[in-house]
Image 1 (cartoon, rainbow, N blue to C red):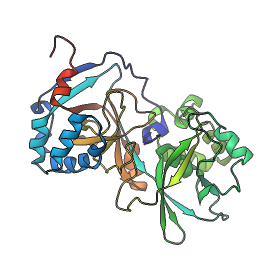
Image 2 (image 1 turned 90 degrees about the vertical axis):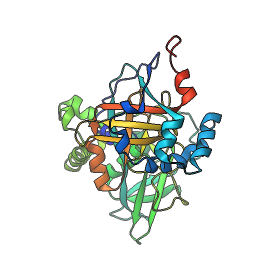
Image 3 (image 1 turned 90 degrees about the horizontal axis):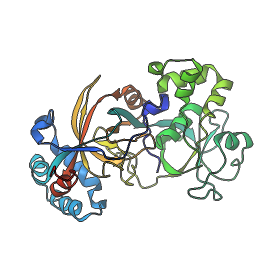
Image 4 (image 1 turned 45 degrees about the vertical axis):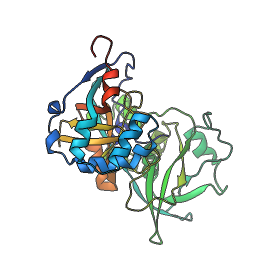
Length: 344
């Protein structure tokens, strides 16, 4: 599932491929976590309980059962977990992602003319299909009943595909929610990185807002720029997702604003608690839960923070591009088993 790529990835692909071989593992004490005592541990425990029933390993299952008995949250984490710092060759980088909110219609109109498609039956899982340009220029999907809705902004539709889920506010006052269903099998290319390559912007200038403005000022060139990314995402309507819940993450459960992160599951188990020490603008010290993934989230020290829903959340997510560190809370025996021989 393609989930959170993060607003920073929309702008510019900053993270080099991580070296997954032989990461450095250090078991820490809770007194080594900056700000640990000041966090709302109960809020983190509540989010942990959203997805821990889906964790299959017996040690995680036992801890989930204990968490369901509503123990003192801080005591629960300190008694049954150990903080594990996992480092590879890539520097730490935090970015942010959000759930877009678009204006749309269930019928095509002169204003609402950009379709949001469900998966066509001929698209096979894991296979490469038509590119974005081929889909848009040949209109191979048009008038086949595959349209979920039509929206009014091609850039917002593009960002919806990057984020992988969103809300569409209809003209009749209703809101429908869509989530990732499938993709055409082509690799993602950053349109922000392409504008940097052309010399239009420097890397630090690129953001979702800058891209939206540039495409709006240059409609023909903007269309070609969006087609620079050959990846194309198809959606499904999420009929049973309550309005007060966040979008579905990689565990097929709702993520929670400022308590859920996307991680690289090669290093961090999905469902695990993760202590965040984000520096830069708006420093953050908080226990979050790894409930999502993203194709641009690669490396032991790489995380995408789910900020929330709507335009303001999008602006806030776009500003997150900060260093720091993340520390995974592991069941005690699992934590020490991760240490190299001779260090246990």
